[in-house]
Image 1 (tube, one colour):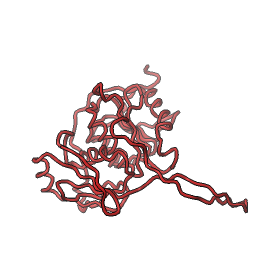
Image 2 (cartoon, rainbow, N blue to C red; image 1 turned 60 degrees about the vertical axis):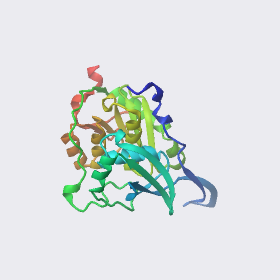
Image 3 (cartoon, one colour; image 1 turned 90 degrees about the horizontal axis):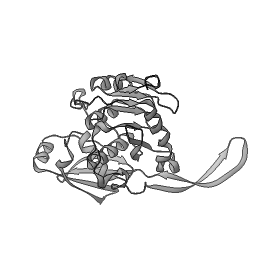
Image 4 (spheres, rainbow, N blue to C red; image 1 turned 45 degrees about the vertical axis):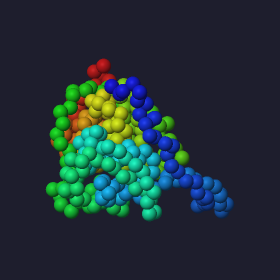
Amino acid sequence: MLPSERNDLNDIDAPAPTSRRVPTLVVAYDDPTAREGHRDLAVEMPVNLVYGSVPYAVMMTTPSDLEDFAYGFSLTEGIVESADEIRSVRVEDGDGGLRLVVDLAPGRLREHLARKRAISGRTGCGVCGIDDLAALPKAEPRAHAMQVVGIESIQRALLGMGDAQVLNHTTRAVHAAAWADRNGNLLAVREDVGRHNGLDKLIGALMRAGTDPNDGFVVITSRCSFEMVEKTATFGAAVLVAISAPTSLAIDRARLHDITLCAIARSDTLTVFSGRERLRLAAER
């Protein structure tokens, strides 16, 4: 259960999504009359994550919910194992972007500085800077409670995603990651130009709220690559629902981590790729 003072995860450091309105000219192939107008675009900005004054990664991200992003990124990167290993997060102006300065507990900082990984350039890239296949992210095995989710709950969550994607309504250019309870009620939604960033922001919000990973499931609007499964597994959730298709490695990792993976999820159908035993189908009600 969520702490009583934090029933609405979207109230935790969740400022309005950032967009920018730009002038446009719309030209139809079969109409010589061009139409002037405006369109809202999602802001994309470099954010430098810094630990103990040492820069670690530059991620291209939407500059909202950055504290959530710091927590989620730190967990899914293996820099921390729990929220209490982060003492503070502050956002600073940087040269051409922002700096996200994360203050770690002393012991955790020493362990982190003993490692080295450089990430730069791409929007939410999950494996930039990896130079050895053995270094691909792999979550530690976790024991999942045998939660059962009815497909009607998944359908309810999917139907609610449209209205919950505030930034995407105006820009049509961002991904979303959401947390739903077992009844399919959406408790938190995070958006970003990078699909990995959106999921990291969501996980960060859940960490900060003390959410039990067994109390719900994750919904993502993007394709489901292996990194999305790994991040979900690192947080400890046992059910992942993706609107787009998974990759073969995503399915392999879902089976490895005993995660129920549903993808190509629509309002009327979904496809189950692993973990059928956690789903209650309509005929089983």
